Image (cartoon, rainbow, N blue to C red):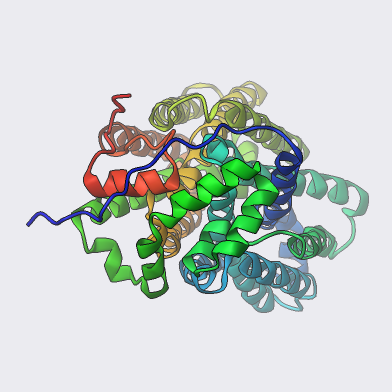
Length: 480
């Protein structure tokens, strides 16, 4: 039965953005907040180069190694699910500060772990922080950003994730070269993660709260004061008035439940899009390279040292691709970038599989596979990677944004866990070529999903998106 959408007040255009001290203030706030993304990337990527040392020092078997590696993903799924509710209740700023403490404590526990069981538990706790950051930081940035710059600002978090992964690969290579003979060299690698956790905690002491969250709590004067720090005065007042127009929705955020996400047809549509995007991002197989890249390259024909160096190269390409994405993300439609991304990923997976199958074993095959792996990583991190987190932070109405992000991030991390757990098993069973053929098929299906089900969200404020989704006026293909 059709339902009546929420009342939709008339809006007036916002004043144009102008540069000034508030611009630098907003940039500084974004840099500090995205240290959560840096920790996300480092803590998920560091295990890639530390496994050999862990196997010797902790007596890991293939089974216990898989359990230990994937423990962070289980924690991340739970952290993503529950932290959205916490940030809705307590605020984005205190939630990120608490996550910084959790990052630090868990990193120290990993370094001091006396056994693989203890390390597994510590990595689970670390995952809680990783998952919490994956939800809270993009929402915080989306609520601070002006509409015209939201894509680039939110996607800086994804840039910091890949920078963190590159830092993990590079630091592992350096530490491995200098202290490679040390039995517990992996502890040095993991210890580095404590430093950005301290920086995040101290930095967030000087960062303001989200103005949209403050308005939801009825603290309009505080919200205006924050907006005047990061906007010109006339723009700050206009944005405050716009968010007030949806105050009745924001009031409901305090009582938001999972059931509310399926209470209306338009909400069920949003939830379906969010879950589909979360699953599709992980089915690209990006974390098969981020967690097992060295092993993949070794099986393709590289030596152990050659694979380690090549893995750093893939990390560099990921950062370069993300920088390019940040330059174009506000100029190109979300759907266009998703379409190009899924099509490109499917093609490069197919080429990796064909190269592994048809080229004779040796350095020639290894180099060809590396080229296609780099192309895959660049395509993924230059399109799908930043877009999915951005769109998840955009599509849910404010009153359900925390719980919606929490649920979709739970799905994303759960899919990450399944793919990462199964990847080495599937490779051992059917080989690299067949494994990447499977990835190619999955991404072809994701391409169809992006074309037929994902709406365009570019160029609309968060409040306009809520109104447009509720009235059904967000088209699959924009008419403007």
